Length: 238
Ligand code: ADP
Ligand code: MG
Image 1 (cartoon, rainbow, N blue to C red):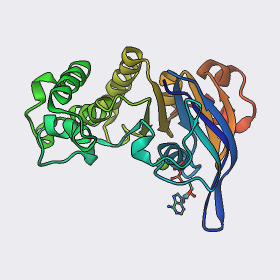
Image 2: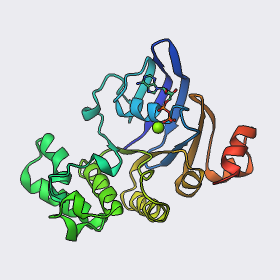
Image 3: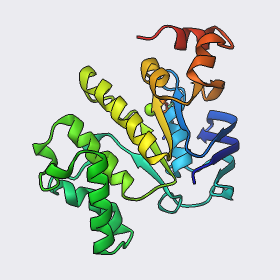
Image 4: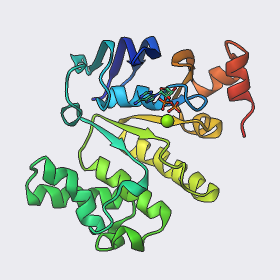
């Protein structure tokens, strides 16, 4: 399960309101992309859903349950950071096992989940290497593996490919889309890259200055942009 509902959620930093009241529903299993220019509030919105920031007002529900006050580790969501968040001194296996160790999952179950994640991500031959002995794409897969083993209700990605080169980015995009098909788990993916949004999303949420300009499928936004901002953003890929 992984249906996420935001009900009149706001966020202010001091006197500055960066998210005005915002309503949004993300359906179970959907691949939703938050897209918009730098500084429009994409990361803040994702961090609010993850629980890494507290909402100023409003409610976040996960599968119908009020999660607004639930700490991040108890929300059942997994945030995928950029690959440089790996522990350099630990093997791939230990990096992937780490969140399970923290959650007190027993060794046999840890092994089972590591094997399954490694298979899904083609990392089986790399489990005993250290991150420094991997390519950028492989490191990114380990970062995703660390999220998979928690068996989350949803994956939250914040520009996970932005420090990879262009060719690798295309490959990883396809791998993440494949993974979404395999797992059928809700994924929320933040990017400022229109091509990523258009090629990966079931649903695109176009953000501008903290509010939603339009929500729709890539085709809907492409063919029926509500205004010039959406048209300019979706219609002129880099
Ligand atoms: P994006 O991810 O779309 O680039 P962010 O969510 O990072 O945008 O930021 C949205 C706005 O909130 C920006 O104006 C940013 O400066 C501000 N902001 C983000 N985090 C903080 C913070 N911890 N304190 C103060 N302002 C912040
Ligand atoms: Mg950001």
